[in-house]
Image (cartoon, rainbow, N blue to C red):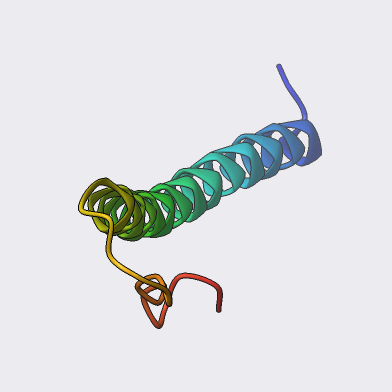
Length: 70
């Protein structure tokens, strides 16, 4: 028979690992969402810069999106 204290310790450890994995997954999802939004803003600004240069427009170049470098 397994002692009750060992069962409680094993269940506590498994619970801790599951909570850590769930928390890590949530954090990863949030970071990937932010990264994707920044990547889209950067792509848009790059596209505006390329269009500005291609059209031969005078300085100043288009400004970056407001949230890009926060």
